[in-house]
Each structure stands twice: as structure tokens, then as C-alpha cells.
Length: 493
Ligand code: GAP
Image 1 (cartoon, protein in one colour):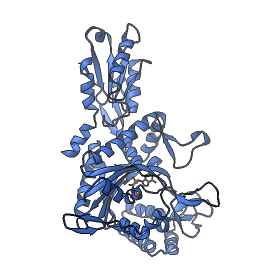
Image 2 (image 1 turned 90 degrees about the horizontal axis):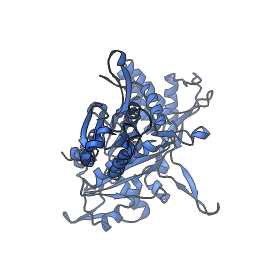
Image 3 (image 1 turned 120 degrees about the horizontal axis):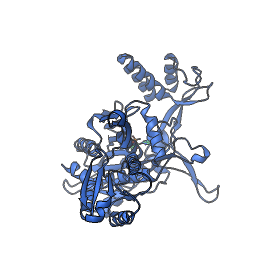
Image 4 (image 1 turned 90 degrees about the vertical axis):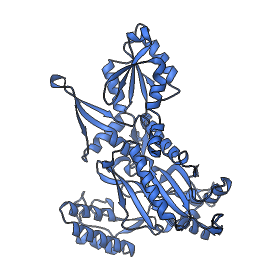
């Protein structure tokens, strides 16, 4: 049996159409031709995404005695975003091509040029180009950035001309108005990251939870960014979900915690079944103004290794900025050293949608099965059983002779323990295929022997082998196989 993992750029197209055809991801408001960079999760997608969120949340809060949860609002006082620096500097440099009227991120155009140079073996040139760009961006020299684009003779892929506008900064925050009448209304932002909801609640949680530094606050929630260039399916969206954890530590100990969280987070992705060869760390060359260390965990998407999670040592930048602007002390009294201080923060931040895409890409498997005339292609989603949208499909071999009723009875006896589906439509082979395509790890088949000895066959999605087991053992055996505990055990080992 030949097993082929796709890793070319065209594989993304297959994944997008598979995701749509089998109820994982749909374009938003598709009947109106969709909304760019916004997607909806279908019946299987929502199950997979919820499983990913649950496993992340539990791994954070249940496996770490000193990490607790939070669910802060999307709307926050506008000064939050002044303090965090988002109002003044959450910008991307954009440039328009005057002929095609297409808009691009100026830095992306140059990064793509550098990647092309690298591919041609001109590494030194690529590095010099990126350094030149970084220097201009740091100095706020947007005309300089434009000049590099012109010097490099970068052309718009649509018009094939280099007829560029000037480079402008574009703030990525969405804003709206709060207030019943327009005169009273005030400008408010949709949060561009969930982290600030954690920072402004740091003392609430610390005091009411009697938390002692070091401790963490974990949160899952929507974030919104008006991305200039939105592409690669759910990789870069305008509305997306983040799973963030801020870990508050004593100043001076942050690098120790940074290393610890770096390793813990890598272990998490491995425990979900992503192979080590598809993951890597990427240290940031250029640190954000608030960070003293930063690394990305990159996944090998069909379009290359790209950021899935960021781990940042954010110093005391955010709490200090909130203290200064709100004039409310954000200090913690550390009884061990008898000192007041603003804690330093190590942040882990993973996009739920990017993790979803990584898990989907990793699971998508095409293989050739059978030999000679019997040879055929099969596609299945090789999800970790604990993440699969549906854990078990109960299938009566035929509908007659009481087999369907027996299969319904089994479904009803296990469906409250794990996500179970019942299917009696069509040939058994077709029903297996339907389950393979959505990644169901087990198919339980009720046949004539079941009616005699209360046993069923359990078919394994990956090996397609069958095992006969007693109905009485189903719940326990499948329960263990599909349990998130198996992931947590790996994290603790
Ligand atoms: N609080 C830190 C922060 O927001 P970030 O690197 O801008 O850092 C963290 O974002 C993670 O959020 C990314 O690693 C990515 O997984 C996800 N993310 C960011 N922008 C996204 C977008 N436009 N669409 C989907 N996911 C996104």
C-alpha cells in the first residue's frame, strides 16, 4: 500500500475543496459570492475546531496548576489600544499598482523577492535586501521602501507593470461606533488580539484567585484584523480565533520561563500527531518594541513553513503601559522576596484557525490500495482519534432482519460518551469511504453474527483492518482510544 502525503503548493487546492465538500470550511455568505478572508466552519469543521480548542484549554488549565482561564469581551475601552501601541503602530505598509488597482503589502513584495533570490542561490543578496527593508521600516522611511521596490524592478503580477503609488501605513484595526445616537457615539475597536483582555484583568484574577507569581491566564476568543493581503485559505483571515496565554513571572526569570514554554508548546503540537519534520522554531530576527525574545513555531503548510504559533517574552511593556495610562497600579507584592513589582510576561499565542489548517493538511492522506485490477486511490483524514469530528460510525450491514434496530440500540448506548453517528444508507464500502473522508477513526459494523453473540466488528480507519469485539466492551475500548487523555499523557511524559 503506497501512502502519499501531499506537500506541493497545489495540495492546498485539494485541501480547500475537500474542506468544503465534506462540511469542514465554507466561504462566508457564499450565496452572495463570499466575503474575502472570512470563512464559516461546517458541521465537521466545528467539531474539529472545538476539539482543538478544548485540548488546548485543558492542556493549559488542567495540566498546569498555576494557569487559569478567562473570557474577556471583544469590545474594550478604546484607551486599551492606545496603551498597547496598536492605535499608533499596528500598521502594515501598503502600496497600490496604478494600472491594476491591486493593493499589496510593500514588505511582502520585498520578502517574496528575497525568497526568489534565495531560491536562485543568491542568499547574500536576499539577506541584504531584507536588511535594507528592515532599516527603512524601522526608520519609518516609507519612500525608501518604495525606492527598493522600484530598484528591484518588482512588477505587479496582474498588470505586469512597476507603476506604483507611494507606500502608506495602514492600520489593521477594525473600528465601529458605540452609542445609540450618532452625536454621542464613540469610536471603538474590534480587538486585534485577545491578549489585552488578559492584561487588563491581571489584577482581578490575581486577587480573586489568590494567584501567586508565577501564574498564567489562558483565553480563547475572536480577534479581527483588516489584513491587506488575505490569502491561503484560513491561514490569514480578517476574523479569526486566538488561543493565548500570558504567563506572569518575576522580572529576571523570564528567559527561563520563555525556554520552558517554548518546549512545552512544541510538545503540544507533536502530541496532536504533527510529525517533528513538519515543525520548526523560527527565531525572530527583528524584535517588536515590547519583546526581549520571540520565536515562532512554524508548520510546513503546502505553501511552505509558516508561523502557526508565536512565543514572546513581552517584558513588563503592556502592564506598565496600562498602569501609566489608567493611573491604576498594576503591581504585585511578592511575599517571597518582600517586594512590589510589575511582573514580566511570557506569552504563547496560537491561532485556532491556523492550527486547524495545520491539522487538516497533516491529516489529508492519499494512498493507493489493492493490486492489479483491484488497485484504487483512497483519500482519508488521518486525525488523532481524540480530534476527529466523529469518533464512531455505527453501520448495520443490511437494514433488514433487525440489524438496523440493533445498530440504533448500540448508537444510543454510546452516543453520550463520544460523538457517534449512525448510517444505513448504501453499500457498506461506500459508507466506510464516507467516514474515511471525514476522518472517523472507527466504524462499528452490526452483522448477522451480532444477532447471535452480541459482538460487532470494529474497522480501523488507517489500516482498514477489522477486529471483532463484544458490544459490552465497546464503550471502554473506543472510549480510551478516542480520549484526549492520550494527548495529555504525552504532554506530561
Ligand atoms: N498577542 C500576540 C499576537 O497576537 P501575532 O503573531 O500577531 O501575536 C498570534 O498572532 C497568532 O495568531 C499567530 O501565530 C497566528 O496563528 C494567529 N493569527 C494572527 N493573525 C491571523 C490572521 N489574520 N488569520 C488567522 N490567524 C492569525
